[in-house]
Amino acid sequence: MNMAAFATQNPRYNISPDHEVIIIGAGISGIGAAIQLRADGIKDILILERSEDVGGTWRDNRYPGIAVDISSFTYSFSFEQNANWSRVFAPGNELYQYTRQVTSKYGIYPLIRFGVEVTRASFDLANHLWVLELGDGRQLRARHIVSACGGLISPKMPDIEGLEKFQGEVIHTARWPDDLDLSDKRVAVIGTGATAVQLLPEIAVKARQLDVYQRTPIWVLKKPDHTLPGWLKSLFRTVPGLQRTLRGATDTASETLMVLSTIYYRQAPWLVRMCEKAGIANMRKQLPNRKDLWEKLTPKYGFGCKRPTFSNEYFRTFARDNVELVTTPIKHITSSGITTDDGRSRRIDTLILATGYKTFEKGNIPSFDVIGSNSINLGDFWHDHRYQAYEGLTIPGYPNFYIMLGPYALIGTSYFKMVEGNAIHLSRCIREANRRGATQVEIRQSVHDDYFRNIQKRQQNTVFLNHNCAQSNSYYFDHHGDAPMLRPSTSLEMLWRAKHLPMNHYQFSRLGDHPNPTTPSTVESKRVSRIP
Image (cartoon, rainbow, N blue to C red; front, side, top):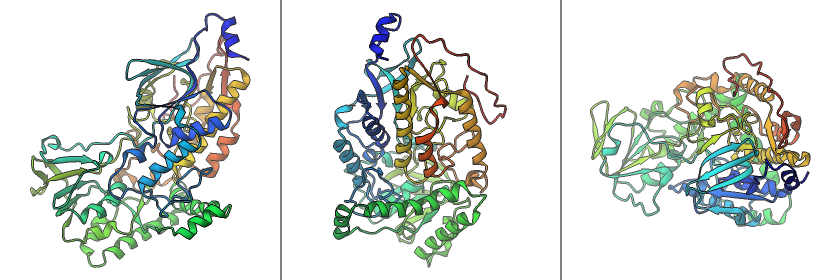
């Protein structure tokens, strides 16, 4: 049914959307959603991006050594393979350029409005619209909105006494200045996660002294990285299917290492043990003469509790004469250095915070207020009642709203896979609404509850609940003790469900319809909280 004609016949409902779909964020997920929607015939799309270019995390992160930690053949859109990667694990700048090239090739740039920040989205139940409030005071209305803000966008600052008193330069790795020169400087790095693994080998060769403050060691495997020769790139361009075949091989390896070992831990604990042995062997091979460091650098938690990474240089860094690994807890930071609990003070010129990002925390996912048809702020609900969403994408009480990185959405191999699956799913919802002449799409409460119950059942088999993860200090976990970052599923299952899940799992309605009474949830487990 033509919506303009419907509004004319029903004068109470005469507010039209400015756009059918507004996507918030122009990183990988925003670009991927827009490409899928356009391919499916949905043209009235606007993308709002608070920065001045696309790329998201890969645009913002510029620290030395940044690179993908999954093979670039896997870490890319399946429909847009890149024959020009310089390495198997491409440097970060190449990922940034890749997002720009894809955005240009698929005609997405004209859809984007840069320098626009969304501060609040509220659902107008009378008109089945989302009202977006922008940072400059303006408003926009959309029939559907897609939250594509990503997860690694808000740097996490450490809660350390005296941090504000330090008089030298303080840098978070997420805000790395292009002109930073560490030559002959006394440098301290707080944090030994995946970012530090890439950063430390790069800056150790420049700094006069490098102190590395470790709270929790990380599992680091050997990195099968190589420069890609020109003849191979030529073959990728000229032999159809060659790169897809290679992608299939790296997909299989990544799925086995990063997914099966994690989500099927109870069924195959030997996979995790194998990875742990490989991590210890990698560390000892790089530090054959520093047995005094082996214990300090060996994690006490299971492989997979926090995201592992790859490096052939990280452990070697600690064998350098100018590098000290500090495992004594930090007591406080002074104006000129860092004092540890043993009373020792180390003077520094530059303090680098490799302390990661906020993930599933109130105010980050989503990064703006979302007020649903139930008048509840989504961030408040999740904070108080556990993070939950059907297929990691839709939530009862928040119709016409799709969050790309929702609870239990991310597949352990590649962010791009999650994006492709969720883009297919949300596009199906919007197209089905259009086919029915519906103006509101909402996941049924009972379907959502059943799905969340199943997610929690699957979690019982994962490494997160079975292998000493409490000591990992992992961003996979939230303050409820759940691990909502990763979906306990293979990527094949996720993509199949996105393409084939029944659309009758959703309730479609039109303006003027009398809403059906909501059937009270029968979920009784206190681990499952029903959205009012």
